[in-house]
Image (cartoon, rainbow, N blue to C red; front, side, top):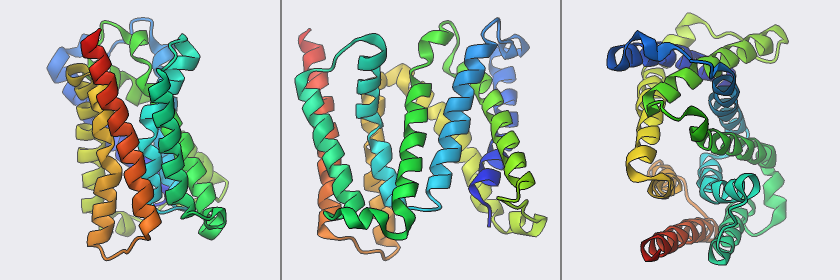
Length: 273
């Protein structure tokens, strides 16, 4: 009923209003001020909220949800590589090995062991869009040092505002170019409960939960929890009656196993040091 452009702008337009109200109540009106940090908030908000949501949901128009969930699970090794490239902190050889194994598992799921499958139904295009969306969120999660002194709630809200404006602008552009169509009120009302779920659970509780989880659990354990995404998606798809090839299940298990083993290894080295 709703294309990815309208879905992103609609759910975040509603969500950002709730975000502002929550921040105002929790920290007062002064917390809504950027204090000279508007530029980084705008950049990371556009990359994180606008880039992530637009690319992932656009990609899902061309690929399967289980493919997207596996690619999203690669955010853990993506983060390790990003830290290496931007801060010069090279991951341990064991971690590099786990990253390579995880990428191999993703390729098994996407191609089913045959590169020709990657081109079926335009899924390669969709997978690439989802991958770029995952990269966008990794960039956003590394933005914390730009907002020292801000609570996770304040960082979430003040970066979400420009990100939402970006989503609305892109939606308006696609409508003006004839690429997408503004849905009717009847179409929006027909998916009112799904839209309510997106706003409350994926925008408000999802984003706030993740950012606070990073604060209280640490990035390592928070990223480990993200490895449950493909398991949950595969379980839901199986419950809906979809069958999977053994190589797809095996590839998913390889990804989850590699990421989990790496996290256990990192926790062990952290305790030792």
